[in-house]
Structure formats: structure tokens, C-alpha cells
Image (cartoon, rainbow, N blue to C red; front, side, top):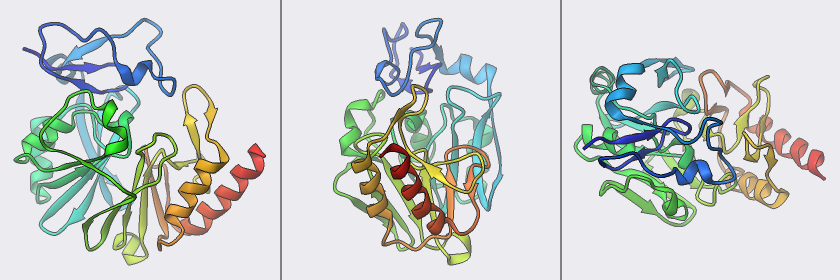
Length: 267
């Protein structure tokens, strides 16, 4: 039986003889159902229409779909001892992309910022022997394809290695997370934010939204919580959610200025 992928958000659903009746992630007020209705592709059809490409994105290998699919997701590979951690995920896993990741040492783990980036997490985990997929337990209700590799962690921090730390910041979703990589940016520290803190188009600031497509701003208390979560950390670089949407240097000062600017704007 085929696996199904939502064309609007890229979430994958279990084997079934027919497409799902709906996608709960798209029906949530933070996302949307496509203007032509809810549609799904089998994994095979998705692979026929799209391929995965990889390239450098400010010192990290990024993986994305070409042509762009769903919300234009791209994953990043963060070096770990003897392999990589995949940060965020893409809606398919192809043999050539899997082979390329193997050439970099393979995957040791996967961590995903929030449900809009869950994608084909099970396929990627299975391709590397069932590596753990770290999702915060507060977002457990949004998992559309349950899998034994998923680690529903709790609390505000999850240590992955000496230099990789997951932070539950909340905001966009209750269980939204960021990744702090202390060896990133030539050991000045890097913060991988997804769109929990969205790098703006001028790449000088970040901003915050409860819903990006539906233009719902995030409240002040949630933004202050995000700021408090990252304030103790050293970082000079921010990797955002899409190709090139990064702040290359001076990121901690930019983050603090962004929080102040945002709070003033919504006051």
C-alpha cells in the first residue's frame, strides 16, 4: 500500500489504500488547505515529480527539493562525531540523497523544529538503521506517521552531544525547538532556528509569528520566553528555515535587537 504526502505542507501519512480524508496540520489555523482542496501524492508520484539536491548553505550541507515542494523545506546537516544530525526534514528521501549523506558519515540522529517540517522523518530514520528522531512531546498530537524511532522528549533542553543542544522555546508551536551548536561558526556558536525566529529578508534581524501564511503575530509573552531561552547561549550565527536565510555574523546582538524591535511594534 502507498504512503501519502500532503501537497500543501509535506507531512507524510501511513500506508493506506486511499489518501487521507484530511491533513490536521493544514486544517490548523497556523497553516491552510490548498485553494483547490486537500490533495495528497503517493511517495512514488512525489519522487517522479521532484528530486533532492544538496549544496553548501553557509558552511553546512543543506538538502532541499527541486522543484520546490510544499513550503519549500530544506534540511541542514550538523556534524556530530562520526556522522551528522539532520536538522528539520524534507518530504522525501531519495537513494542519491541517502548515498550523499552516507558519504558524509551518515545520520546519527534527526531533530525537527516543529510540525511544518516533519516531512518524511520515518523514511530518513529507516534509511540509517532507525536513528532517533527528536520531537518535543508538546507537539506529539501533530505526528501524522507515528514511528518507533520518534523520541518525544520533555522539558526545556535535550543534550545530543557535547556541542549540540536542543532548546524547547515554544512560540510558533507549544513544542517548538531550536538547536544550539557551540562549535558552529568557527566555534563562536550557531543557533538553528527554523522559522521559530524567522530570519528576515534583509538578513539583519529575525521576527516572530504564530502563523506566517495567515499573518497572525506572536504574543509578547511568547517572544519573551524565546528570548530568555537563548539569552544564556553564545552564538554569532543564525541559520534560518530556507536557503540563504541566515545571519552570518553578529547574530546574538541581532537577535536581541530583533526582540526589542518586535515588542515595540506590537505594543
